[in-house]
Length: 375
Image (cartoon, rainbow, N blue to C red):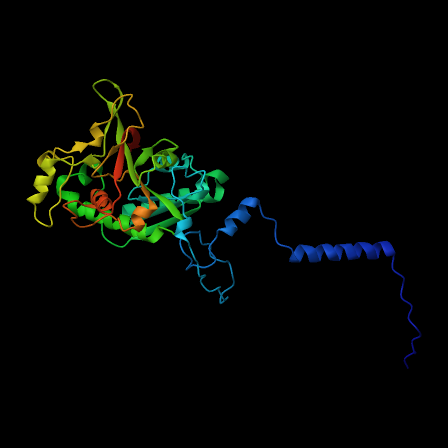
């Protein structure tokens, strides 16, 4: 038979033990509910991060690490007043956003290294790339992504760009080989530059955002430029401006390094060229830099002088695209790169003609140089 139990006496707890336990519980609760510590940089990046994958391309989008089946926020309704977007000769002081666009077939490490040296604030720079879906393009994409990851994830904070966009073009390249000697043959130029124009337009129309002030077209084989390239070109307050593109090489005769003109697409028109165009069929184009088609235009490539004034500026009728700074309003007005004969011009030269037709005069700097990779 069970014995009835009497009153049970509880052992009195130590007040110090109880106090420590309470403090521990409070600490655990605060730890569980409080947000993790973030640096000022993390908070700044989060503030400009797009919340939805359909957000406008003005901010980087980072996919949320939610569980499967989680409900996403609806795409935001964004309102922009383009009258508030400044485009001035003082872009750094006015915190103006720059879009650097690069069609790329091959990746050169020197191109990326030069990009990192740009002194324009990188948090104001968005990078856009387009690459072909070829074996060579796949390798370039892999190499590019590796450098982007290294810079954006592990590089110094001042090297990291606002955002990076990579596109893969869905049309075939005009020629199989991208070797310099092959791609510059005259017989390849029309088809090659048609494809280049389509690539530029695809890249431009996909990446140009409502807060973009300037667009810098920079070829993937430009490996040397002044670090102040962007602010230097913007300081002239011109709608379209292009520096001179040269190439360094080893002069076998004099046993020393030298330089030579590379880009011949920046020019002032001539009566000869206009007369030739007047006699052409609707699908024919004028090309520059070929003896078989002597236009007698004034080529900016040959106007550079040793020790010449780097601020010397002149109006142009055609421009090259190796390094080309464009006010975003010029593109917004409709100036693009025609992949078809436009006044018998195509791609960047056609763009210059289209810009002029829209009332935007292109300019060039004969003594301000950038340098092309020498294959």
